Length: 416
Image (cartoon, rainbow, N blue to C red; front, side):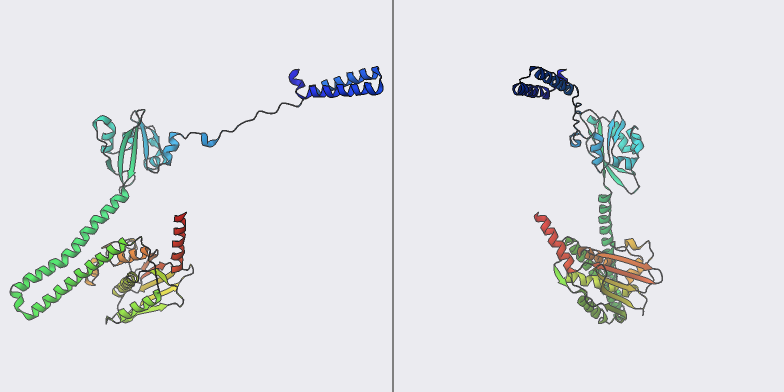
């Protein structure tokens, strides 16, 4: 009953008593006063019995940030494969591990999950008897992938297996080894030729003027070949060292293309007159290195002159495309390049036809140099070729104002 009356009922009784007293004082009629008092009490009691229903309890939603993440949630964030192993079985595998080994590995024997003899030997051994050196694994995922396995122990005795992808490092090391081997071979071949002719001239062959002249010409050609190779190696090294240093000088690529065109026409080469340049008016300047851009033009136009059929035009076109980029295209009408070779054309010392390339004086580094120059200028190199029709090299470069805008944005964000 007390809970039904509530806090407002006593105040209602006080008001009712005050009203009854006022009636008595005004009328002096005791009977009317009693009737008013009884009626007021009844009204208060009826009102107290019909109190409002209790308010629903306040439900406090838990803050999702207060929920502690599970071990599975934590491991799934890691981009490299991680396994938790208990009693020899995989108890937890993060997303990266499931993508590499398959989601079925959870619950399997870890030696079955990671099928590799060295991995099985490490996982089967007592941690106290083995070193903490990582193990290199080959064959997980694809045959080209290389992984490094590290094993640690958690506080509850479970083992943590961490697989680190070393494929990129392996590819970079293989490229370095191949580069050194190729450079050594390219230098050794002309050097051996020069030394052989020198020995021959030192003997009886030096007494014949005609033979001596022919040998000296071969030696001079081989020495020039070595010189070009050394110059290209130095140039490639310099461009790579400056790869992340954005050029700041405004260069008129139209004027530079005209200059290179005139230089090639003045060499006296029978192909020099086959170069046809079409340069659109109003091409904006680009932020660049004039020496590197000149080298890029010489390499691309020179390649088109070498590999295009004699007497066919070498087309050089320069314009601004619809996206605002400066587009330089060099096309030849040669034998074309098979599709499987195109992705590798910019690799160092890669040649579609090694014998023909050497006979034409190529070092195997020209397109690699072009690729690095274009990358330093924040551009893009596209190669399109059709067998029996010819090849087109297209360089897309941002105008100077675009690079300037990006540089200012970068500086502003850095200060923030």
